[in-house]
Image (cartoon, rainbow, N blue to C red; front, side):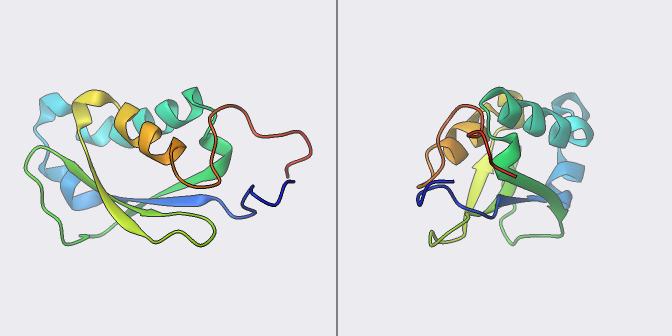
Length: 110
């Protein structure tokens, strides 16, 4: 493992309240699965841990609030995602975090 590769995964806390408020056509109940698929498609599934949370204090209409807790020294922050993008916007954001690169994890990583 390199010095730049974090030992702990980035945590993604997805607001359950936002999911329940989404219009049924947005597929809020299935959104966590689509988020996981988007992360896996960018090779980020092994470096992230997704959990549902209670209200995060941001209540965007038609969007979902995700608290991003990066591994390492980066600050936790809120990311508002568009359910119509099936997690592509979240995967892109996570892929740009310091110490996280697209692609599969390096060999030898637990």
